[in-house]
Image (cartoon, rainbow, N blue to C red; front, side, top):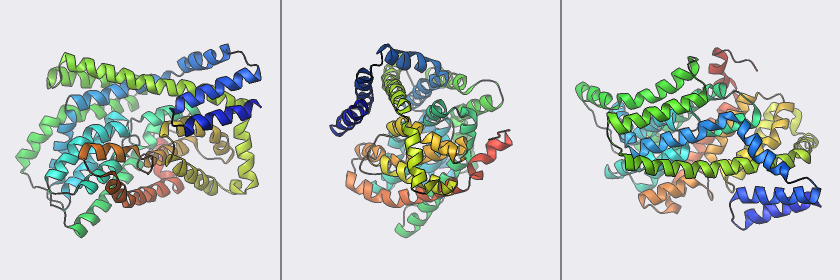
Length: 430
C-alpha cells in the first residue's frame, strides 16, 4: 500500500503541473508515514546527508559567477573576441556563436546561463547582420548545450554526488566531447550557410585582433585559472568555484567597472533564489532516493533489463539508457531526471561493467540535448522570448541541430576513449 500511494501521489502531482520537488517530498513523506518510519528520518536525510555532500558548495558559486558575467557584460567581450577569431568565413556569426559558447562554458557550467546571458548578445548580433530568427535561435540553443559538458559543469557535480565518481575526472572527461560537439555544430552551420547564402564574416587587421584580445584577456583568464588551479593541484573543484567567483566579481567591480554595488546586490539575490531552488530539489531527491533504495527499485530495474535480454552487452545497456533519457527529456525537467532516474540505473551500469566517468559524461551530454527537445525544450522557450521569434519556427529549425547532436552522442557513447582519453593521461584508472 505504501509504495502504491508513493507512486500514485508522485505521478498525480507531476501530472497536475506542480514543481517536481514537491512531488518527491510529499509522496516520500506519505510513504514514510504509511511505512511506520519516523519522520525524523526525513530531517536526517534532507539536512544531514545534504550537508555531507561538500562538493555541492561549488554549485551556488558557479551560478553566481555566471550571473556576474552576464550582468557585468563580460559576455560581450567574449563574443567580440570570438568574432575576431572567425574572420571572413561563410556564416561567420553562426561560428562565432559556437566559439563564444565554448569559451563561456569554461566559466559558467550551465546551459541556461549560456542561452539566457550570452544568447541575448548572439541572437541580436546575428539578426542585425541578416540571419533569420529561427536559425539564430537554433544555433544559440545547440551551442549552449556545450556549456555543462566542457568543465566546469553543474550537472557533473550533481552526478558526482550521486555516483561517487571523481569530479576532477568527470571534468576532464567532458573536454573532448565538448569540442567534438562544437566541431559537429560548426560543420552543420558551414553546410547551412552555403545552402542558404548566409552573410560572410568580417576580416579584421592583425592590430584590431590584438586590440580585441587585449580587451578580452582578463575574462579569458578565468577558465585558465579555474582549470589550471584544479589540475595543477592548487585547489579542489569546489575551491576553484570560489576563486573564479571572486575573480569575476573583481573584474566587473574594479577592472572594468561594469557593475555597481547595487547591481551586485541584485546578482546576489538572484543567485540565492536559484541556489535555494536547486538545493530544495537536491534535498527532496535524497528522501526520494531513500524510498527507492528501501523498496529495492534499482534491483527490480536491473532484473527487468536482464529478462529483456538488454544486459547481454554494454552496447545494448547504453543504447537502452540513452533512449530512456532522450524520451524522458522531452517531458521531464533535466534536474529531475538526473536526481531521480540516475540513482535507479547506477546499479545496472555497474553490473554491466560500464565506467562511471564515461557514463556520467554520456548521461550529462544526453540530458543537455533534452533541453533542446520539444515539448519541454527550455532553451527554445528562452530564445523565442529573447528574439521575438515564434516558438514553432524555433522548434522546426532545431530538428536538424538535434540530429547532429545525436551523432556526437553516438560517438561518445560507443567510443569510450573520446571521454576517457584525457582522464587516463591524468592518471585515471577505472
